[in-house]
Image 1 (tube, one colour):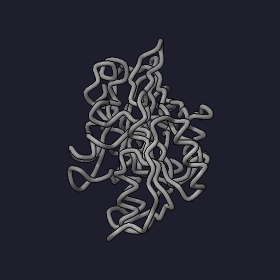
Image 2 (tube, rainbow, N blue to C red):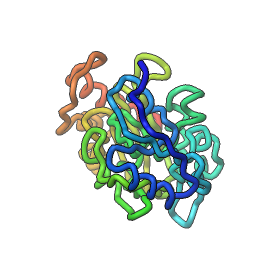
Image 3 (cartoon, rainbow, N blue to C red):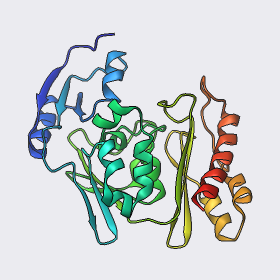
Image 4 (cartoon, rainbow, N blue to C red):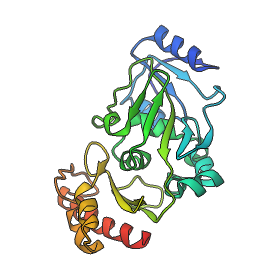
Length: 268
């Protein structure tokens, strides 16, 4: 299908982007990689009045390690995250996740900021951000990941607020991210992440609810000495996933338990 008519403007700075968003109002959308927004527009599930293109803004594609923090600019492409020596050294699970995102076209154009701001429950980066207590930095404030993902496609971002970077803690211990999907480049039916931080496991789940999930019951069980297969049985505790054409709610719960066990075992 053809998108509905819209205005287009390209910003050369964050300040200019904010002014354009103020000009066009609440019906405007920020355009980064576009691999989530444009398909919705073509189906007319999204009909923004205007697009503000931020791809011309320099300095939003940085990857920097500062002390015990890793700063990743919002316009950093998936391929850059996957190939970054800094990320492979400081937070290798993030490079692993980036290699699993979409196909080559998506990885060369899609951005981490776009995925985070889109807040799709099937997105991979939100799971890692929540699991590791990352911060989402905008032009106005810093929002902890636990307060950022409010509901499906819902965040606290204001109409003129732009994600500028995501700040992760450095974590280069045992790790693994697993996606279960029907085809190679599909979104995850369910995903599971395991990362050891300061001697303790962090466990995250993708697409088992309207937002990413941190499986604290699994973390607690592992902390008390449970084996992976025992601890992973708690991965479905409290979950109420929506069923779809690919998987029923019960199957998603089953996948959460199975993938969590595999992620922990393969990380070890």
